[in-house]
Length: 135
Image (cartoon, rainbow, N blue to C red; front, side, top):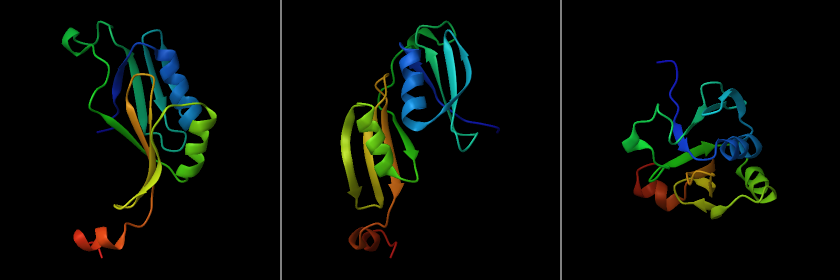
């Protein structure tokens, strides 16, 4: 296997590209009128792509916007990324918080309705660690 990345059905490729480029620093590695592929600025195998929802390459029964999927992105400094989300006026679905299982995170929504969970690892609470045998 050389790579694995989602192709998200989209009705607005330009806004999708701008969301991931401006917000998370992705680079455009391929772009045509019905398809855009982006790559992480730090790890080449981390990629995401967007395909025009009604394009003939997508079987008709699958030409839908994403539902029931959460895109999860681990970052070095979630506080800085949260601030960038606020500066860009992006929707914040879950405010920045610490979770007992060891994540500091927030959630935004991309232009396609895809929930994007951005997190940094922190220590889990003692209670959580004990409950799951992690202590």
